[in-house]
Length: 410
Image (cartoon, rainbow, N blue to C red; front, side, top):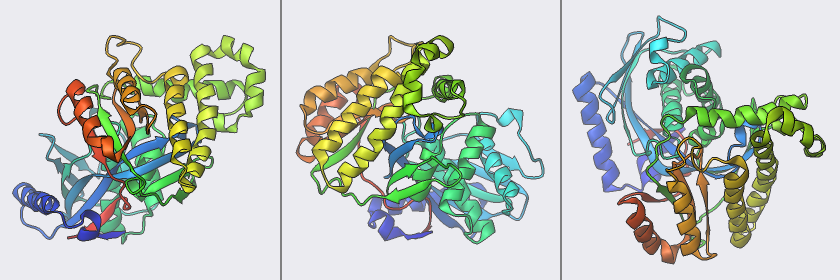
């Protein structure tokens, strides 16, 4: 997909300067070449906390913070990618297929995994140079890694495959790279939202062909703003905490003869509750309860949005947050109970909102960020109050972006 610069950004002077710097940095690093520009957005999870990896349903939206790239073929079989935010350049030799232990857990592993999966699916890959700059906050729950992955996939689709790799295929390729080459057992929600853009209801019952429906929603016109608050606890080093959630949910499913909770009859789960507590443990049982309730909640949230019933929607958002706190248990790390910034942010937000709007954990959890739907007439005061506690520039007021990962015509 191609997005006109003005349509993507409204011709903002800030973005013009940003892309000019991107071109300058590319030329300084790789020399003067004919370059192509790309952009991939971060995403906000609106509903369906930790449901996608068990073939559940989610609500997600692309946001107006993005990662951009200038790229060009280099005529070799090596990918050279430099990010402004990191000192080291990623070098990926495509003549050396397979996983590389030295790359595990690094962005080079994502690049290699994307290329490996593209080859497996019959797509072409080749060497290119790229320079990237990102406004998607790392470790913030806005899916900076997914945005990077689908950006690389979009570059490969355009430079070597005549844009034939569909956005949903790019999302699945990106998930494969993160699961297999990077070593993080994520679901498909992040990559799908970043790749397709807009406000989406996604059903992963059939993950090889997820059902995706775009919801038309102008939140600001309805009187509310989407705020993301970074409480200052990075996701770094929390991979094991994330991994336990799908593992424990699937442990319940396997005890009932299936692979994922989506395949389990909820009544059968409750009929076997006593034995499941013994074989799987109470936390697994509670996380399964969260899944069943959260999956149903997504349908109710989508319906509330279709009818513009914001009061009902906010009621469901708060219920999602309560379920994540009580049953899913991903608000803070059990190994770091002295650090509960997210819990504090949620408590303060409930107090200040006073029944107007809603708040919940955002994304993976374990300390990272919270999400709040704040009345437009209270946004400035809310931002002022929350930043007085967590620091300047920790509250980000976002807009929903209608574009996913795209080639940008500047």
